[in-house]
Amino acid sequence: MKSDAIDATHEFLVRYGGDTFPRLFTSARGTVVTDRTGRQYLDFTSGQMCATIGHNHPAIVDALHRAGDKALHFFSGMIPEVVAELGETLATKWMPEGLNKSIFINTGSESNEVALRMAKMYTGGFEILTLGGSWHGITGGVSAVSMASDRKGYGIPTPGVFVIPEPNSFRPYIPGATEEEAALANLELALKMFDMQTTGHGAAIIAEPVISAGGVLVPPKAFMQALRKAADDRGMLLIFDEAQTAFGRIGTRTGAEHFGVTPDIISMSKTLGGGLPMAAVSTTTAIEEDIFNKKFAFYTSHVSDPLGAEVSLAVLRVLEQEHLVERANVMGRYLREHMETLQQKYEAIGDIRGLGLLLGVELVEDRNSREPAHELGALTTRKCFEKGLSMNIRRRPERGAVWRIAPPLTVSESEIDQASEILDAALRESLDEMTRRQ
Ligand SMILES: Cc1ncc(COP(=O)(O)O)c(C=O)c1O
Image (cartoon, rainbow, N blue to C red):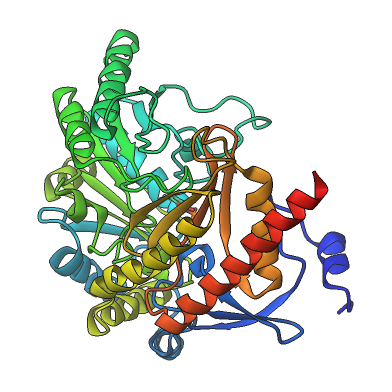
């Protein structure tokens, strides 16, 4: 192996977009990841938001061994015992009442492909309403309903997609209106436009309970309730994409629980696999029965794999046994207090929002103009990394520069103290450096 990690990356690997850190990484445990030189970093992104119970939790490692002793994979028509047990656990402990039937696949993108296919087959429609700034995945169908990344260069997206402006308490599209008024007025207008354009074949409204990649935006409860009504009024299904919100991250079991709204379909991934590729979709018995009779199909080489199910059961048990759903609230408050202290110190911190341990910290040029501070965001994120803190910054011109801060729910107070000190120092240095350059 070449000694220069980045040379090796450039020579042999396809670069797939997003920021790449200039190191190769070798191990991870709890909140800490380690690079090839032995340097350690606090991981305040929980990997790709998957290490919700911490990296390489001993229960996950045990589950991997158990799966190794039993079976990793079967023919898709052979349902593993452990998959049936996971279905029962989701239905009886984690899903809102009525969402009893689940299917297990591998990635969040795939879970939303499943959800859309279910909705299309059940309703006989194809039109989908989605929220601005949303991210539902990279594959064909779901990239067409995703608005948080660049869509240019990949040809014609799936037709029949309509966009509802996303609620944004910090940048409301209607000046002077309250957050809820603006969200509801925008929704009303979007539905009016949809009703003008629809072919009468609506299938679903899809929404993230917290619009995460779009800047960690928490919709008002009335907005989510209005989405439920909008779907019902039009004979469409409501899909919650709970890739990030399912299983404790926001201090409730699911986003549906937080909002008190039961969708027809919930897609889940990330936390469920604890770092392994694992995803699920849950729906009602009535919908499952209907689409089964219409010959619904979704299978890949890895549908119902026992390996992922063994790990998922372990993750869900740890969440329960270590009381991590409640802990998301406690540690979320602790982290938020630290961010608020920094906000008092730095004019550049314009807004702090989020739920539980999914926080968004938005950087601005100044608090009056609310102009996004993109350069400051990029520079500070780099400096954080150099000082041992891995942070994720969401940068889009229309949406601002927002740190998504989401450590594992097992994060300790001292790790939060340490991360806040790094952030403080990195922000100070970045601001000084930018002033010197002017
Ligand atoms: C809300 C949401 N949905 C779907 C996805 C896609 O999941 P995956 O990357 O596992 O395909 C993501 C990934 O970031 C996500 O955040």
